[in-house]
Image (cartoon, rainbow, N blue to C red; front, side, top):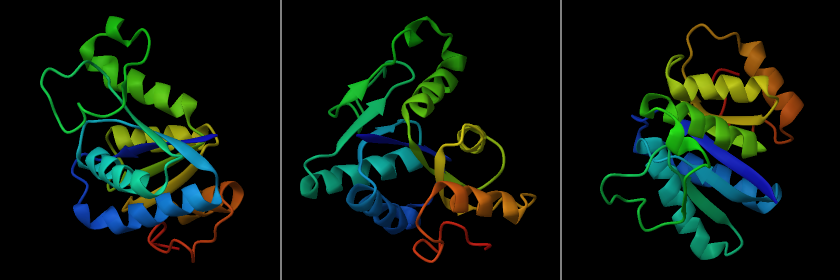
Length: 174
């Protein structure tokens, strides 16, 4: 069992859905990823949830779980699915709960799929933390203006066996 988690900006465009789907199919078929943890804060989380829900019809072996930072106050898209509240998070002040939840997901993950469109915010921060922790990181979009190309090239050469030709959208500047 290998675990994947997701970090992405809340304003992620729906146009990345086909790319996300292709990446997830490859991870399931070729890299033994069968467990997925995702948040519930923004559009990237909704897209990941939608794709995983669709793929679960074909791949009965996959499990996906919405990891809450706090209990939802009203029903949402995620309320009818498999959900989890990390132990002890109820004692964390709400303003720190998302960070605590993201750390929990990252600790459980073998691999991270992220959508980063700018170098600030939680998605960029946790993508960088994942890289520092030597996690496999697949970036669906990256428009960092001041990031040296060799940093991202080394991530994929060292940590991921699939060449950049397999996912040309992953590292658009290579």
